[in-house]
Length: 452
Figure (cartoon, one colour):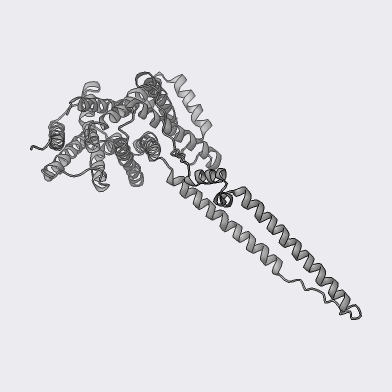
């Protein structure tokens, strides 16, 4: 197994960890900007860049059709009927649709003519026999049979439409292309739901809590989901060592975060400690941040099923789907709900972006850095690594974010380490090495050919 996918994933986590530090400063410069507006411009820039690079380096790749094309097959009956008609047999005449139609029409016309002649003959005979006796006519009562008949016709027509719509839906579902649905689902989860949950949870809680959900919780959730969905299997030779390595990496990441959180609270005064968030906001923020784990895990598992597509073009499609979903959500929310769901209308989001891009150089640098490196490069690396590694290994590198963030804070802001952070970093490194080593042993035994 090559070392290049592991190095690429480390670079991707370095970009993501740097955004934990830079993103806080960038978003504070534009406090009026809503998260959905930031996601709108980020997905637009990332999709445009990646689709252009994919066109240059990977060539033109067409997006898969939503519905599979039907294979046109010649029916054997049509060939038999044409041959028999040309030969003049009676079988060909019976199978000819034009001849049967003409015969049925002629027979129906002859039957109606006979009925009309019989009706005229009976009327004339009644007039001749009963000419001297006139029976008084009775008035016909207005019976509700006509309205009941109309109601029955309407109800039967509605049932007919429902039956036809059900048949049409079943036909469309039968010819639905699952790969197109997987790409749409991956783009919606990774490029729309993931940044929405992270940015909203970051505003409602704190960077430390957001990095817990965005870092160590992701490999744990993805591994559990992959095992439950039977997309991956636990190690048959070292099951306890595999789970222990995963828990060691996650626990080391949590130690780094708790050490940073305690160290930050020790330097706060009484006024800053008293102005903390309330319990309801804390609970709501953690519920929103739990969507980060679900969205990232779903994106990683879906990317594993799409390894036969070029990585740059696939990531560009996903960001394009995220932009369409973000734009459509803003448009529908503006028209139907007045901006209550997303926090702003489409016009307000565009005006906020125009003001931020024209007045804040920090935001311009931050949004391009996020779109090119944090968004485009990281997800393109994940698409590339999906063709070489399993989803649980890819998401395990998210546990590197807290240690890398601590190192970047030490370099840029001068924050100290302490023995707790060093202990957590060692646990993360040991857990990742153990987990990846077990995966490499299993892949080596799997691809090794059995002896004679």
